[in-house]
Amino acid sequence: MIGRLNHVAIAVPDLLAGVAVYRDTLGANVSQPQPLPEHGVTVVFIELPNTKIELLEPLGENSPIAAFLEKNPAGGMHHICYEVEDIVAAKARLKTQGARVLGDGEPKTGAHGKPVLFLHPKDFTGTLVELEQV
Amino acid sequence: MIGRLNHVAIAVPDLLAGVAVYRDTLGANVSQPQPLPEHGVTVVFIELPNTKIELLEPLGENSPIAAFLEKNPAGGMHHICYEVEDIVAAKARLKTQGARVLGDGEPKTGAHGKPVLFLHPKDFTGTLVELEQV
Image (cartoon, rainbow over all chains, first blue to last red; front, side, top):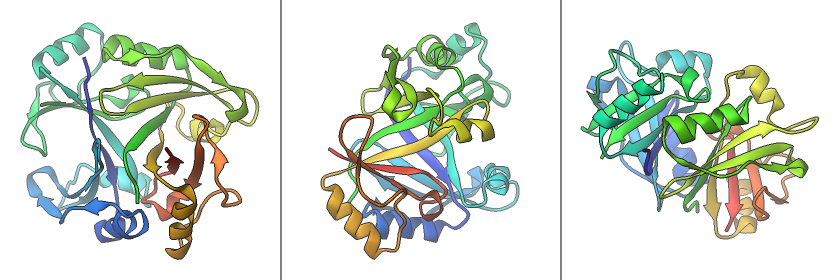
């Protein structure tokens, strides 16, 4: 069912410091910061030849990554996103397998404007998994 | 400097349970388990079209992932590996930038038989980073 690894998201307390690490220390191409107020984060994309890394900084009140950064003040890997061709079929398969989808279980529009689901870390090897229809 | 994302490593307390999640729930291709006693882990590879996920289970005493699993008993993302063309040049660049390489700072032979370095999470957005020469 899952296809490409779309991205790994790393939550950081200080986006510019994270940019400096990836641009200057690791020599990667890093995009300009993009505020996504409807998702409660500001994001930069690190474009690798085969996939991308997203650095996420909290934006505004009730950011979905605020609690993670309280537990991990230096930052850390927050979630991993796999591509699927059909998010409705994916949801049906997950339900059959007894795996929990977060929220009300219905696909939402993700940060890339495409339908996404987030899956319960306890059902996925302790890892927050996002599925994105591409 | 960094090139492709070589793999994301996820530490798990129970490899077969992790295999079931990726094979049955997420419908991915999962390799047979490979014990790597010299690295203190048993590994399976999840082959995605553009990269791979490695599930790691502790093997033997003093496994390098034992402490991580004590803190994260359900498992979780343990490290991320980026490819570099020249590990000696990478090490020199890191030193110039003041970033810390773990251990004695010299490349070691990694789980894929290639030279690797591990970088200090505190210098890399809270994330344990492996660099592998390919």
